[in-house]
Image 1 (cartoon, helix red, strand yellow):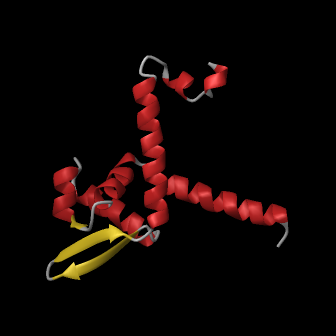
Image 2: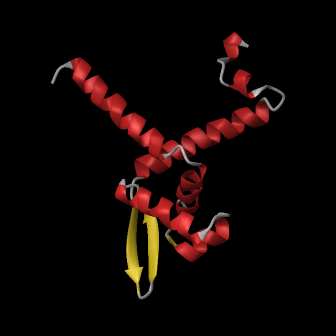
Length: 118
């Protein structure tokens, strides 16, 4: 495999991951599960959405390999399966929160500019 093909594969994989994480509710689910496994009811207590919507997002994350699940009687418990995704989400969300706090007076467009360009 040549270097361009390897780079394309990496970029394609990263684009797929970012696409998967582009929905705020999925980020909230990942954040909620960083502290341990939870069932759908517990997740609904923390995240304001409907049960069908929650189930759809859980299913998408499960099929992508981000979440694992186990059945206990009638309950299904979800857990993070991909520590890589949790680390990425934590890093990006933390950085954005810091920048929003530091630069609350900046417009959204200016927040995306490097500090040297402001």
